[in-house]
Length: 163
Image (cartoon, rainbow, N blue to C red; front, side):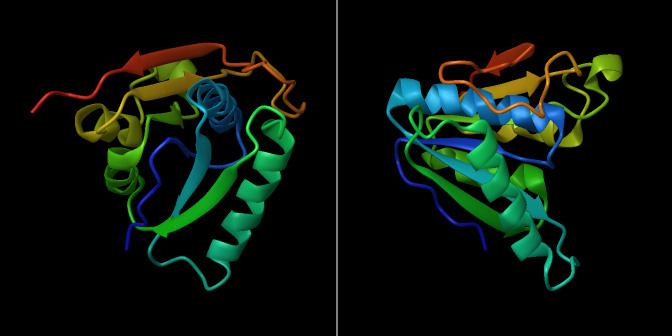
């Protein structure tokens, strides 16, 4: 079941602790500060995942938020773990968000920023502006974020489709 998000929320889809997800998280932090919003970091786990998958994912997101989102910049962040398909879940949650940031797929530097299936789904179904972020290994995702720094090497913003 998909959890709703509050208004004044910047939603960020996190695939794993990899450079493009970190770029999306840092972009979300900058957007949250701009909008005076909270961050909701979402990780979607496969329906057949083991009994500890949700706890492990929550731990990963908590660690990423502590490391990559300066609390002075964004004092409020929350973790959301869902089971299912990432595209439909993020699209459903985007109806209540100011903006949705996602990392491009890991090999987008070779195949293009639109190459991932989640990105392609969200291009059609996201209900808010979509920010597709990529790092492509040019920054150090292992370094903590500095206040005001996004460390996003490439970003594409797409407005939602009109019905």
